[in-house]
Image (cartoon, rainbow, N blue to C red; front, top):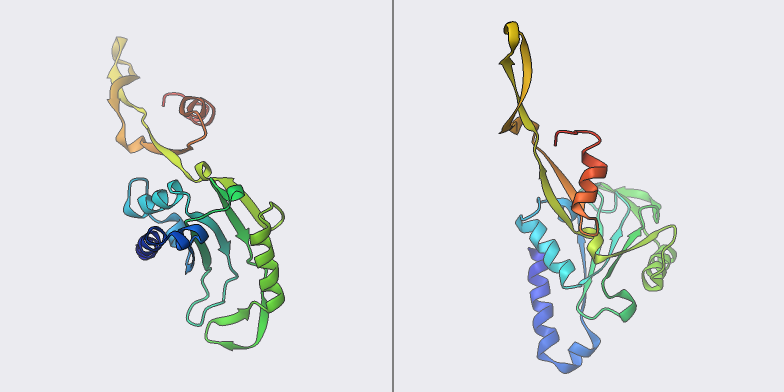
Length: 206
């Protein structure tokens, strides 16, 4: 929501001035990992991510080394958001793995034990501006990050009495909610084809 608030300011600035609109506005903000994954489909967090990606504002996410912050050793990420992507970047998002770009500090400051020197900063910046896939960089179409959440149901198996009182399993028209499962199917994949390939081989009665 904090990023959403900043973007709302970005939108206002980009539309209030022709000059600003031409050069665009770029935001860089540091997050932990949760904004990338928190919230199921349809939740507030998920809808904010969807809003950012569908408007083609997400330019890049840079994964930084751990132990970079004073009061925590958790992983951190830089999100780069802009309202004026270059033509080559339109409809795409860049993921940069910079977790190994660090040097050990001579003296720790709380949980901060690592730093990024100027040369490493230049390398990371070069990967970002170069916008080419490589060892530390992957580029995906925006659609890669979207998916359809599908509920997979299985029939309730009941015990019935057959001839001579023998017990046998009967598939009913009822659903066994205890066996309910969910699949997240990428937007680029055909749902029926995915279901046949990834679900039915494991649960034929789904």
